[in-house]
Length: 307
Image: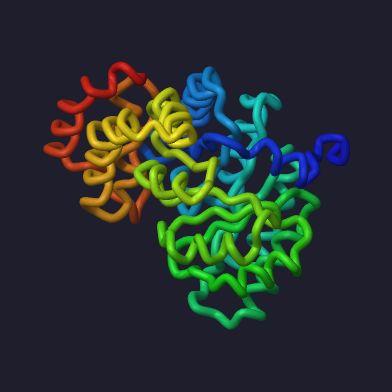
């Protein structure tokens, strides 16, 4: 049965154009999974023409989940999406966990794998290549490598990974180093599909270097806005794009930058405000302070058009 469900890597690559959503993982007050809340959020999201869903990943607090919770999120997402768009899932940490999570997610019906960096920072290149190849070999699915945190590879290392891993189809930047990203693109050309992944606030910069796919956490709250930002940046409509960035996106990202982990906490707080299900974050992340919630509520009238 699994073989019939597998989406070939090349097919997945073709579908990854536009806005890729990174859903939050809702938790109840006792910090247990709220899978009914996740279903509600996904139903609202899927009313919009997004390109794909990645669940769970960073915005979904992947690092706080047990393997069984990870699988529960995957199964719920796959069932709710029901083939409307590709579903990818994140994995990483260390070789055995990465392979186990990839395999169980593939068996549950995901269409691709997003590989996070390993637990040990600043390793030798041959170790890095072996780590990502191990994840890639765990399934027949297309693999996307997520460059984030300490993992900021040189163009030559990205090229080595692409040469070693046939099912590596895309690269997701999570560091907003546009200079380095341009050098990587120049080195590899169209061997990989290029994804902007450092935040909605980086859309103008990413799209200025030819990228036409980005991962959006704002899609948790306002997928309509995420899609409009993609349309405007693709067409070069800088006036309206600049207005939306200045009025909505940049202020939100200023709040998100106030404390570590707020990139998740802020989105969950906004979801709760508009009738979706965010809930609290799990430690070591922290929730917004009461004064910050009050300040955020005051700005929501600006978002009304997009919700």
